[in-house]
Length: 273
Image (cartoon, rainbow, N blue to C red; front, side, top):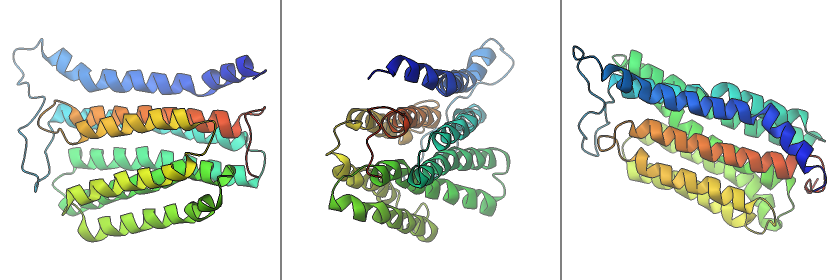
């Protein structure tokens, strides 16, 4: 690629600094309270509560609540910047639509997650309100998955199955959201399986791509490994915050792939439109 030095310079100058700064701040704010308070003998330290049965929801400590809010809240601005970068790099209406869908899904994920964790921390006594935020948080994951695949399905010629998957993936997101609305927190393993299935099925369609598959696979590994921490509340301190960081890392890698292979001007910009 002839313009790779220029393109990489543009990427790092426009987007990566905010991502890495947010990553550093998220990690720092997640673990700084425990580090600081460990020097104070007068304050009780509790970084993790006991694990609860599968039928109940884990109650984080105040430190874990703060970490949960910080580790996604600090990614809202970078996600807005990233979506805007893709939009302004768009060369036609299809690129604009794909950028808008992906940017909205990415930002929406971090916004709803931050709102829910803030509500769970500060207004947990308002159970109905907290439950609504939790449902929105779970629904946003489905739409984020759909938004993450949309640029590839819309801008790459991937065969006849891709034409169907372009709209089917949004149907899956709506079905998943309806499931959350009707059976919120009743069958947690079923819900987890729904997320995994929605992330895996469209991947079968885009495996025929020559470029971008490696980055998508690496990002997917971050999501999958992060699920281990997602299910480790009460076993690992700050487990949910660590899950958030894995999500952010996976999203960062997927964003890079979309930016490089679908929006960056040059020989790599080989789309179906």
